[in-house]
Each structure stands twice: as C-alpha cells, then as structure tokens.
Image (cartoon, rainbow, N blue to C red; front, side, top):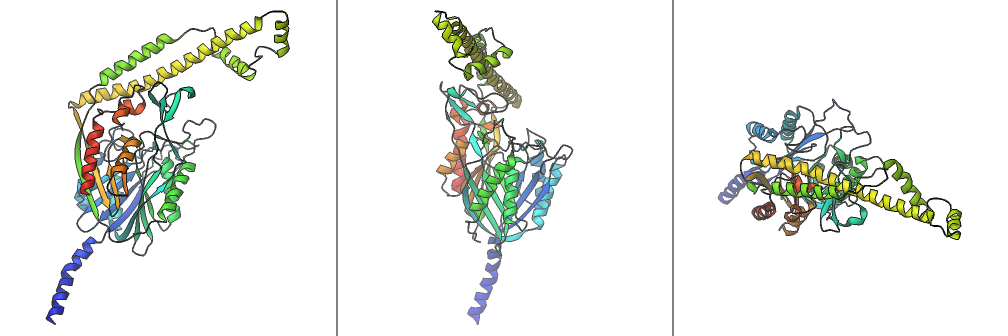
Length: 497
C-alpha cells in the first residue's frame, strides 16, 4: 500500500510536467484590406500562437510589402504590437515574430489594431496539437532576376528599366525551389494550420490591377481549400531578394498571380500529405541583436556610376534616322534580308548594268540602323544606372542621418519540433538562404527574410561589389562584411536550438 501511495504521489507530481510538455496552438486571421481602392482579393493578418507550458511564442504574418519603411505599415508597428501582446498575454517581445509576405498590396489604416486582434483570437482558440516538418518543391513559379553579362558584371530584371540585350547575357543566378513546411494537427488528426516558407517576390499582380495579396495570397487560399475544416495557411517569406515571378516581363499575356499561386499552393499540399505528425515536439525561441556595419563607400560608388554614365553619354553617335524612320526600315530589312529596298528583279537589273545603287543604299541604311540600335542599348544602360543611382543616394542619406556606423537587427531562431527557422529583417538573396540550409545541423532548417523590421536588400558580399550596380547592390544600407557576421550569428543560434 505504501509503495502504491508513493507511485500515486509521483504520478501526481509528474502530471503537470507532462501537461506542460504538451504543445498547444491557436490560429486566427483578420481581413486588413484597404477597400477604399479597387480590390481583387483580400489581404490578411494571420497569427499562430504556440505554447508548451514554459514558452509562448506568436508568429504573425501580414500581407504587406514590409514591416516599416516601405508601404503603409509604419516603423513603430512592431514595437507597438509587442507591447500590447506583452501587456495582455504576457508574451515576451522577443518571442513575437512578424513576417511580411512582401506583396505590394495596400493594407487598411487600422492594420495595427486588427493584427493584435488576430493574436487575441488565436489565444482564445488554443488546443493541443501534433506537429510534423517536411519540405515540398515548386520550380515553375519563379526565376532568378540576376543576369550575368559577358563583361563580368551583373544586372537584374525589373519593370523600372529595360532588360540587357540577349547577346550580352551569359548566365543567371541560382534558384531555391524548396517549400519549407510545418504541419500542425489537432489531436484527432484534423489539420489546424500550416506554415509554409518559400522564396518568391509576390509582385505579379492580377489582370484587374486591383488590390491583391498576390501569388502567396492565392497559394494560401489553395492550401486552405484543400485542407478544409477551417485550417489556416501561414506564409513566411523566404530569401527572395533576387527572385522574381517567372516570365515577369511578359508583355503578351495579362499578369496573373492566381495561376502561379495555385501551382505553389498545390505543390505545398502534395508535400503536406506526406508529413506524419506527432506529439513529442518542443518549442524554443532565441532572439539576438546583431550590429551590422553600414556602408562606408557609397560616395565612391555614386561617383563610379556617374563616371560610367558620362562615358556612356559620350559614346552616343548621331544618325540620320529617328524613331519614325527606324521602325519601318528595321521591319523591311529583317523581312527581306537579301533584297530589302525593292524586289529582286531590280537588284538583278542593277547588277546587269554594273550599278551598285541599291547595294550602297542598303549598306548605308544598315549602318544607320546599327548605330541607332546601339544608341538605344546605351540609353537603356544609362537608365538602369540612373534608377539604381537614386537608390544609392537615398541610402547614403539614411546612413549619414543615422549618425552611427552600424545598424542593429534582430536575428531569430525558432524551433518547433523538427522545424527550424532563422529570420532576418532584410531582403536576403537566395544564395544566402541556400548556404544556411546547406550548413545547418538540422535537416528541416529554413530561412525567412522580411521579419521583425525592414532594412532593404542584403546582397552577398560578392554581389555587393558588382560593377554592374544592380538593384540589390544599390538598394542596400550594408557594407559587404555584413554577410560573414550574419552567417556566424546564424551558426551560433542554430547550435543553441
């Protein structure tokens, strides 16, 4: 009897520990769409709250371009939301992770209040969950926008300027088709939520040009429709700094994010169905501040761009053609390359009479067209440089105004069972994410940019030195040394997780 009492007491003492180890989760979403403008599809703030008895964490995603700096969400948003969540739910600010999908939709003015409401609703709906990590693949919706040129420089594909001529392009940057997945099921096996991580700029837009959550909004809807029962799909943007939607510059078909989103969503669903969930998952969050060096060479880089613009400007050569005369000539000389100026019999007649009148005319026209085309390519290059020079000037002014040589960023490490995530507040290029995943000790390790703030682009150290001055290299506050410091910090955090 005495032994039985001791065993019963031990069971009672261990019961709270067993209960504390049980992971609980709650999810909710709220509509944050600005409906004062034409709307194609809704934008959401979504919240996933996790609790294992000792740790509580909130993962929040918003269909917005950034957490501060760009778009409607103001810089104080993160601090305000964290303060309210700490006051109301005692969630430590360091355990609140907020990711922007980076779609260019417009959120409503009360986005902050609604975001907190999403977390409040999630906290009210906490249930015990089983979890499982996995990965999917989708290689049909995105492409690297960095183009490697014959002269060793790199440019990029943007709507802000023309693409480099095909004959100058010799390669492209890498891709990451991986979909990182965390599945959360209720105890009865019913899906509760899915986190999916993927790298793509959701800037495809829709034919109506209405307000839209873009590719990732449609992907989330496809996942939620497939899972059913109110399950929530939560998108965490990856390292998409140099990743565009596929055929981003297509001018022959309407730009339709829904098609690409459906491909991404269904590929995620296909992989989710293979994930087995279980209860033995832990929860851990590590949030560390990392000072990164601000760029100190912006004045030299601006001077280099201006010098290159001057050189290109001086290379322009006059020609007798203008746009009105060039276009019909170009069509004419490409339609009939052997006899462009008239029918063949006129050329044969000239030849029989020992004349070269048409041949000389053709040579003159071809030379003028070639010069005109070269001028166009030169002007396009000047335009590319001008757009990115403006970015350099903006960030130089920001760095000067900051008054200190470093910028502090949050690096978060999150582990939920086998699912491991590291975050960064900037636009990481895909090569950074690929490297972190390759070196990570845990097999299901993923990377999210655009999280807990926004510091613009973060290109690789090598890309930052690119003499072609692409957007990623110029829309950047950081010195090249940032990459090594960040990767060392990530390595240390992953070891602790």
